[in-house]
Image (cartoon, rainbow, N blue to C red; front, top):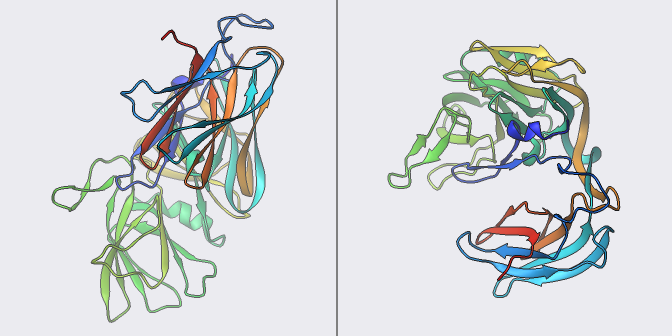
Length: 388
């Protein structure tokens, strides 16, 4: 079977830069629509319409969608103006049988990309992870997860990965020297002081919060849960004369609060929190080095070199993943094409424009998408025309 079973288990975690680190999940959809084969499926055909909602509780704007031949791909070039807003919805292409082709493409400043396959009962699906793309940094489910992380210094990858198995280790601290060259990297352990080589500075890891948040009433920093939703460390930074504290967040660069002082050196905290759960893995590599896996078994962390092609079990032993290849300095690119001249998986390729920004959105029949805009959330739905 295709990926139908997979939709019950795995979701790509799309993590945004939000004050309380809310997580939005995008379900990986089926690769094929179930149903009888044939040149045209009447239950999929028109008349169609595009529904656009600015709020979940309103009926939305309804725009008819007409194509000359439902079994053939066509250019649309139609603009749906959302009056009273700076938003434009551009309908670009219609495909009767939507197919996606995903590959890794070399790109300056790109991250570490891994192509993996997920195997299990009635399941075999390829997955792409990319350290440089928040939308592709992890897959997660109730039976386990895989997260990808990039290390910046190639000299001590093995030492770092083995150091992460320490009971007080929560991640990696990367510190760039003033000249901006290759950073010094060390394991961040609670209550440990780190001297930065070649400088007068030292850093102490004071506190770690898996789910950093700020109480809206007291304005105090609080930890909402033990799950690594918005991981952060509080550091004490000293130069022999001055000492001050600062929070570093894993999901976005540190920005000093009004009462804080900007750090003299650029720092980054990368979390490696497994939440002590079996079936969870963190895949890590630096540019030009072999990958490593950090995992937890019976509450104890373990680091090992990743072996390409070897199956690694999730918590449910009937499901596993294997790493097919690692690509350095790349991005993951998905191209949308038409598979055949049959009405199997109708879709409309759109571009959403707002205040000079453009984002592509793929509208599959009867599958609403939620697109974040400045004023909230935009909901778009491609469906058969409903009676008024």
